[in-house]
Structure formats: C-alpha cells, structure tokens
Length: 460
Image (cartoon, rainbow, N blue to C red; front, side, top):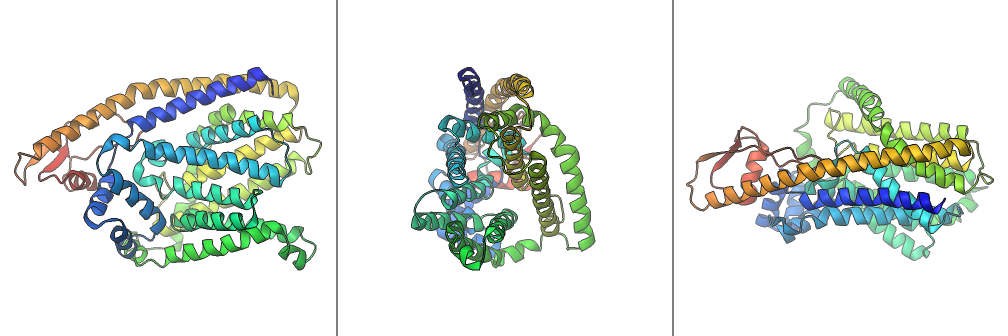
C-alpha cells in the first residue's frame, strides 16, 4: 500500500480513537450497575459471587470481575472510564496478536503495518456493527459478560494458533477459556462449535488417526477445549440458572420457532441493510491488504471461499437465534446480539481479504473503492464525533447534577418522601441512566440502592 493511503487510514483510525475516548470519558453508572454495587457493598466479592451463582445466575467468572470493579470503585464515578477503556485496549491488542498468530500459522506474509491496520479496522467494523453501542461497549454492568467473553475467546485463539511454546499455549488459553466458559451460555456454545469445526477440519486433513493425534494444533487445542467444557458445565449446573429460568415464559417449541423466524427477519431487514455503509467504509482496507499480498498462493477460488464462509456464518447466526429463542422465549437484548456482530465482522473481514488476495477484484475497481471508502469513513466518524461531542457532555453534566441533588437531599429529607426529578437529556451512544415515572420500576429501585436513598424517586 502507498504511504499516502496508509496515512489516510491512520487519520481515520485517529478519529475513531477520539470518538471512543469521548464515550468512555462521559460514560456514567446506570441501572443494574447500582444493584451490583449495593450487593458487593453489602456482601463482599466472594459472597456476592456465590450468592449470585446460587440464587440468580451461573456466570461466576463475569460476576467475579464485575464485583472486583464495583468493590474498588463503588459509586465514585472518577475512574470508571478506565473500565471500558481497558476493555477496548485488551480487545484491540488481542485482535492484533491473533492476526499475528494466524499469519504465522497460515504462513501469510502480512507486514506489521498491515497487521495493525487490520486490527484497528476490524475493531471499528465491530463497533459500528453492534446493535446497541452503549449497552455493549460502554455500560459497565454488561462488559464482563459479553465484551470480555469475546476478549477471552480472542486471546485463547491467540495462544492456540501462535508460535509460543506448547506449555505456555495450553496454560494461558485454558485460563482464557475458563473465563469464556463462565461468562455467557450463548457465546460459549458458539465458541465450542467453532473449536469443534477446527478439530473436524484438522481430522479430515490428516492422513490417519495417528497423524491427527500428532498434529501440534490439535495437541494445543485438546486440553484447553476440555477445560473450557468443564468451565461451561460448572456454569450450566448453577442453581441460580434454574431459579432465574422461572422468570422466563414457559417454553414451547412452536413459540421458539416463531421467535427464531422473527430474529431472522430482524437480521435480514434491520441488521444487515443498516450496516452496509460500514462494510464499505471499513471493509475496503481488507481488500486492499489482500490485493497487496498477491493471489499466487490462493488455493481455492473466491466464489468457493465466499460460498463456504457464507454457509458457516449463516449457520452460526441461526444457531445463536435458536439458542436465544429457546432460552428466553424472545429475540434477546442487544448485548446478546453482540456475538452476531462479532461473527459478522469476522465474516466481512475474511471475505474482503480473500476477494483482494485471490485477485477477484481488479485494480481499477479497488482504486475507486479506496477513495469512496475513505470519504465515507471520514464522513461517518466525523459526524459521530461531532454529534457525540455535543450530546454526551450535556448528558453527563445533567446526570452528575442529579446525583449531587439526590445525595444532598438524602441528608435532610425523611423516609417515605417522593421526589420528582427532571428527565435526563439524550445520552447519544452512551447507555442512559434514566429512571421511570414509576417508583416501583427496577431502574428507580436500583438508583435508591446505589446511593442508599431514604426517599422514593421518579422522573417526570
């Protein structure tokens, strides 16, 4: 790639980093954050994790991380911006290291600058492919179960496919997969299926069972896969899962099928079309990088690769929809759909890269795509950076004023008083801390728990 094009890609990356930094800085505690802060404040980390495991949810790994954060920071907002910031850095570094590992494993001569560009643009594509950015990337309560689950999976793959020693690979990938197996049931199933596909592929590529057993990748994967399975079983047998399950509607295969169909329609009508602009803006660099490497080593045609990748992608997406529909009897909240965004981003990255690598897209077409994608990327990021820089400070200021107001009132007002609060302005991409006009709503109750309010609160 030319130096000029690389510099322009770096400029686009800088715009994105500025946008994400802004969102982290103005992020605020919201809803369930307050509940878990109150819980860990009252019971401590270990008791908090065990009580959640027994009475509510089996996500022991995610709950432990969440309780550690809440125990350290409580309701002091000052340093919370470090939590989503650190999560972002861990994911970006993990993707970069995974690209290095895959380049080593598949013997791709991908230069360091191209590895960095691929990692950054994958993250940007993943960010804008999220159904709800605030709920997935910024909301503290959500991070440990979903974003960190993906982070753990990415780092596990990095150790498995990389060139570290066998012992280091097995040890650290196992630790990562313990976290992944104890964070999210739907995500864990997808990880398990992906690893199984790798094992099946390596088995079919082997001449006999002995060569399959001696396969270094299989050896590096077997123990972590078993550890992952054990971690997931510990998750599934949690008594809290069965108690929480009683809150969901009674399961019926017919209804689960209808919700699956509804999810497929939402995916085809609301998810894919509204992300095509992001695919063009942030997917073209993968085509350019693939093209720069040449197609002499392409083993299969682009059409065959595209067909195989599409079948795998759509099969995994359908599996996610079936799992969510059967477990929850609904299409699921945006944070659960983040695994769809992750699979979508991997799919787009792989297809775009191979389109360039195989020579399927000609140089004149790539030249047009480069200019168009850069202009679109600058437009998308420039607008969002400007728009969020207007909205987020207003929201954060109003939120902080509300908290100061209720905490001051809490010193003087008697119990059983009801206070009506001015509604918060739009939170933009951030996850809103707004409460409802009903004192019994869970958001209102959780705000009271977080600050030990003696009085009732509601929003106009």
